[in-house]
Amino acid sequence: MAHNHNHTSTAIKGKKLLWVALLNIAITIVQIVGGILANSLSLLSDALHNLGDSSAIFIAFLAGKHSEKQADKSKTFGYKRIEILAALFNAVTLIVISLFLFYEAYKRFLKPEPIHGKLMIIVAFVGLLANLVSVLLLQKEKDHNLNIRAAYLHLIGDTLSSVAVILGGIAIWLYDIVWIDPLITVLVGIYIIYHTWHVVNETVSILMQASPKNIDLDNIKKEIESLETVANLHHIHVWQLDDKQVHLEAHINLKKDLKLSEINGIREEITELLYHDFQINHTTLQIEFNCCEEEELIKQH
Image (tube, rainbow, N blue to C red; front, side):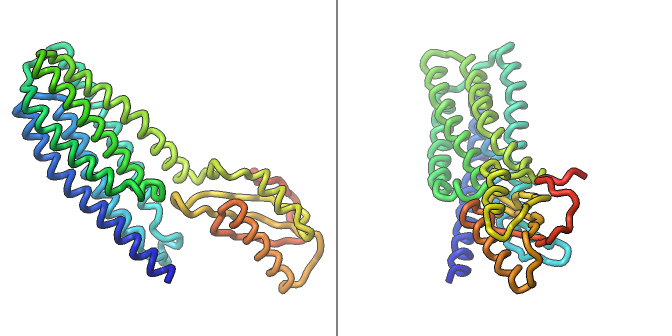
């Protein structure tokens, strides 16, 4: 029953990503045409963000489908890291697009151009509606998957961008304040970079096999060594396979030389402790009795 439920849940998430990607592609085309006709840099920037988002979300959809593949002899950990690579690509793409738009905005500050404010408002409003629908579609899943969270951040940025473009269009239409167009572009770009940088840090940490921030290695050592049979925990490694799976491997030195049947019970006890107290769901333990000469927590190579 649990397997079927998870499979269905994953399929639903995949379908949502696909629909969001297709919706954003359609809106991107509308915004590019509208931006050219209105001569609006902020509208074109909104279109470029949507284009980046469309491709990023579609990549997220493909990555999610591919990550469902089972482990094999060449990929013994499976394909879960594809989602992390896609999330990193999404975030970096958005930052690069924002930097490009900063350059375009700088040129507009130096040489302002006339803009069709009314058309700018209409096209931006259509984009706003599409972004709001997309955000609602991914709202529930964003906290459970790093890749969907990256796509969600893209869409939040586009939603804010559309609101800013609408306000800018009103100012241009009513008061001919054309310099607000590149200003909006810069402000939206700064906001997106600020919020996307977190995704970059998190994905790089996972790829570098850093210990999760919520894992306290000293506390793990203390809890395991408090067990009656354990003398020492050492040579520990903790890392994340993706944003859900946390792995741990370590050496456990016992106080007594026990039978293999007794050791299995100790291993199960430690595994349960790590799972319930530290949410570590994949554990590999090397049980020893006075084998290692070096017993430091982190082995120095």
